[in-house]
Image (cartoon, rainbow over all chains, first blue to last red; front, side, top):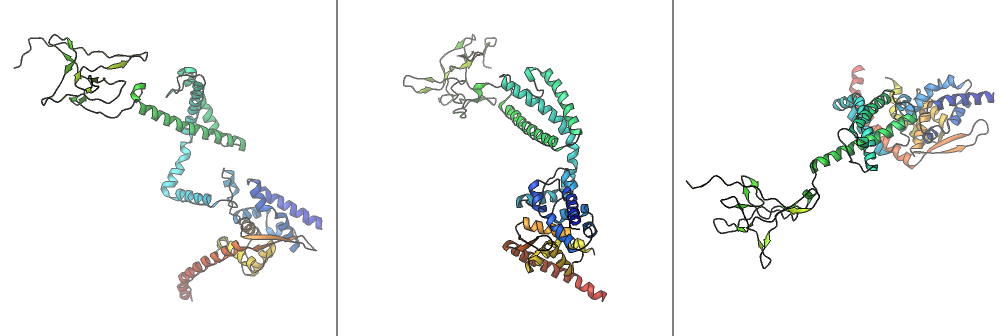
Length: 322
Length: 111
């Protein structure tokens, strides 16, 4: 008789426990650690099999789940493995806000639309995977770096195009096969996280490149302190002045003053590398209105060489004032 | 009205009240709830509620050896459980007051 009761309890408990297989072991134990003892108490109260008094073990498990604040096993299988047994207050609040957001018509519409974006993500994921590999390769080989929009593994955009096509197909097939087992799901989640992070990094990098300008010249980033003086012509800053005589011969050491006798000083940004250099007199004082000012430029090899004198062809003479 | 739906919301309170009155083991709590008039309460619901309150730190438990039959795990309300019971009782009182006011006139009309 006792054997029968024990067997009945064990069988009943086994079926109930099976319904909690989706929970993590510690949570399951917290909930079910004395299930057998409890069922034995119930069995000892009265005659007859447990199922006759408690109902089917599956139904018992469902009721137990609900009263413990757990989601239905279907919801848990869909990927939300959680338990209110040990849920922190923050997590509960987050979940409540999420529910509220989803319950709102606009929130619900957005959330309902998300699954439709999945195929787009699958395709993007394939592209990002190839771009990630290409970036790592170029870092390893000290190559040209990021190639956008087409990734260029080993410096070949054609290879990048082919690899992207293959990767997109593989990624979409992977996505279409559904979540699958735990290992597969973990792999997908990890891969998605890495590639999404890479995608964001890529965007930021592109944004930074754009801000720095496409053809990047090192000297442009030298300090810029704003003009310390200024001369404009037709709205354009004038940084140097070249004087020519009537024959078109460039003049050197010309002093310019305005109508009041004050020196005419061109716009100067205090950029010692690219700006004209202001002449100094015997005492070391600046002579800012002596033209043309000496102006260097950097040649292709990175050397500083004297800048060119602009060409000037004098108008056909004789020139007169009407 | 379906009592099981109403029970869901107040089972915590009911179980806390029963255990606070006197320590009890699982099936004992079920029986006392039923004796108090909550006849539709399910064993699984009570067991799940006891486990949840225990896991949440509102109950403590101890095992009492028994000569005939299995050992019994008794549950007792601790400080946190008592505070929870007091708070929930307050909520329940104001809720039932409001419902009474709402339903009071209907009862008179029907009578």
